[in-house]
Amino acid sequence: MSAFPAFTAPLIAWQKNAGRHDLPWQQTRDPYRIWLSEIMLQQTQVATVIPYFQRFLARFPTLQALAEAPLEVVIEHWAGLGYYARARNLHRCAQQLVAVHAGKFPNSAVQLSALPGIGRSTAAAIAAFAFGQRSAILDGNVKRVLCRHFAIEGFPGQAAIDRELWTLAERLLPESDIEAYTQGLMDLGATVCTRSRPRCGDCPLAATCQARLGNRQSELPTARPRPKLPERRAGFVLISDGRRLLLERRPPHGVWGGLLVPPEGEAAAVLARLGLSAESRHDLAPLKHTFTHFRLTLEPVLCIVKPAPTIGEPGMNWITIDTAAASGVPTPIRKLIERIAGDAG
Image 1: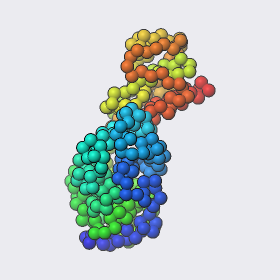
Image 2 (image 1 turned 30 degrees about the vertical axis):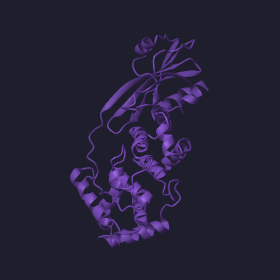
Image 3 (image 1 turned 45 degrees about the horizontal axis):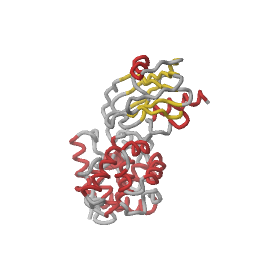
Image 4 (image 1 turned 180 degrees about the vertical axis):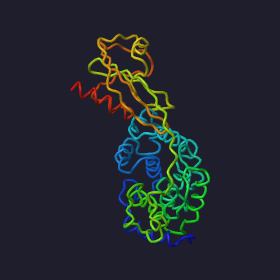
């Protein structure tokens, strides 16, 4: 039995009655679908994930199909979800499962956490939903619920606070109904105990929540100390023949790894490298994009070249302007392409 039945029992009952039950990856024990959803849900909200999950599953309906697909195709179907290391690890994990585990997922959280891209909390969620294993999850939403309910001080990302939360999460585990309990924690953090404006009146744990009792919902969890993000600038050269754009495949690792982007650099140097000359050049309005660890100002230049030459440099692709935005490009590049496509239209 859980060490905290006043916490677990109301949560399980609430999830069964008022929690989410109709998400595309629920009502199944299929570890492939569950794993895919859990990876997509890392740092991404459910409403954003649903259409990506459905499209991804339509293109890669099985673990084998994903393992056999080229990484570039996987990246293209991930484009727009961000945090692209997830897609690369997803592909590596699928290949490892096929090569080493005969295409079957291990059924324990410890074994799952040894696979690429699957951390401790994600492994526990997969083990609980696919195999009914009793394992503790501790994603960002769950940390918020625990910090508020038990009035845990300190930034949850600090090592000591993280250890304290994991110890608590393990002690809270019920002996049964692990799936409803795990989903209940996720649902509570995502829909009720939200970062701002938590709906305490709808919370099944309101009577024992220390943050609510002390009117400290806005104070807990303790916010991350926020240093000023460094600023970076980069030039991108949108080379067009009036009908098509020249896009370059990024290396598989690093920022936007494996995605298509316009050549990066100063316009004259990029054109010289590719052996091109521009009939016209237009400086476009800068575009700002925030990454986890820095802010990037994109400084785009549109260069018109005619006639469209064949580019011999590897990784270069001529793509029609009206399809380029959906061709596996990162979000800020999609915005730039849509901007010039709208002007062309």
